[in-house]
Structure formats: structure tokens, C-alpha cells
Amino acid sequence: MKRFSLIALILGSALSMAELWTNHKGLTFSAHSWQIVQDSPKLTTIKSKGGVSFASVSDGMTITADQLDFDAIPNPNKPKTYLLSHAVATKDVKIVKTVTSPQGRQTTEVTGPKADYLTGSRETVVKILGPTTIRNLDQGQQQSMIATGSSGIAYLEPGVQVSSGNGLRRATLEGPVRVVFHQAATKKESASDITATSSQMQLENVGQERRITLIGSVHVMGPNGSETTGVSRALMVHDPDKGWHLDLLGDK
Image (tube, rainbow, N blue to C red):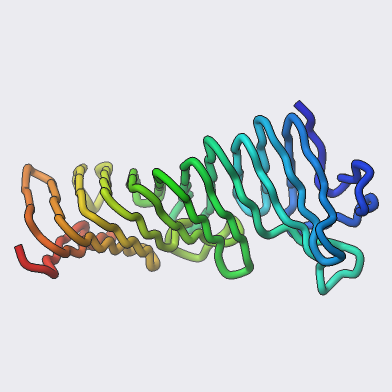
């Protein structure tokens, strides 16, 4: 296994030492093999294979996969340096994002067979091609979620510090979708579990409120054995003060 800092990556490529620059701090990378391809004066592709691990402390993010290809583009604000922003990960892909807010730590894990990863100043986009699992743990609200689907896309917070809310901003999963929530007992809420299935799920976290829209063949098993089935569309909303409530938006 070869380990090196991207800052010092040269390997006989057209990039000289310290020219490969990134806005990530605490950046580490390891792989069994890699190759640097100078596609054009404005694009350098770094291809790596075998036990690939890419981690950024400043972004609270790690990517592991069997293969990882990512692009280096010229940094317009710093001559002779490069920005790393886009990656394609293949086979046994796991992307983990951790953020901290005044309410606590939130960790989001996205897994699947292939992922397109694009990071920016406003948000990070992870598109999974193939069976997708999204796990989200909110230590502040003592709440966890596991959602699975046939494919999906997740939008994550940039950086590691957020003023409020969750590292997972929003997500869409195509069906068949299965979502399992667990709420631990807190001062405001009793422990509860919710399981839902549908043809599609749209999730949005705004502040400390979580909104989940379930579309097509909705079936929800709620706390205390409550059950809703045969609904075409439903909205599940959770906030720390009111807990969960379910609004039926479509006909049975």
C-alpha cells in the first residue's frame, strides 16, 4: 500500500512538486497503484486502483473504493496550482461526511457500486449509480436513519462546521425505497421507531426540522403499532419540539 500527501505528488508527471494544490487541509490518500494523465493544459486526471482511500480533515470527508479517478484543474486564484473537486469512485464505494453544529455531531454515510462526487463551496453532490444506502446519525437529536433504494443522490454540507441543521441537506432515492428511523429517548421525546416503504423518497433537512416526502405505494409503520398503507403520497415531518407527524397528501 502506497501512502502520500497530494501536495507532494509528482510521480514524473507534468506537475512539479507543490503545484498540485487543494483547498482541503489534512488531506491523505492511499492506493495500491496510481497514474497521472495530463489530458490538457487545463485538466489533469489522477487514476488510482486497489484499496483506495481519500480523506480530508478540513472537509470532514472520506472516500473509499476499489478505483478512484479525480480531476485537478488550474486554480484561478493562485497561478501554477490546482484544485481537486470532482471524483468518480467505482466498486464498494463508501463516502462518509461528518459535520459539527452547536446541537452536536452529524455523520452521513453513502454507499453503492459507483459514485460521482462533486464538491463545491455551497454543497457537495454525491450521485450513486446502482443500489444505494444512505445512513445518517444525528447525535444532537439522538436520531438515526437508514434509507435504501435502487439509485440515489445526496447533497451534503461543505466544510465541517454548520450553524444548525444536518450534514445531509437533502436526498432523493428511487425505489423500491425502504426507510428506517430510530429516535432514542430524550427530554422532549420518547423512544420510537418508524419504518416506511415507497416508490420514491425525497428528504430535506432545514435547520433542525427533517421533512421526508414518500411517493407511490406508501406504507408506514409508526410508533405504538400505528400503520398507514395504500397511500399514493405522504409527508413525514420531524422537529425537536413536536416530534414526528404524518400528513397524507394522496388518496388511498
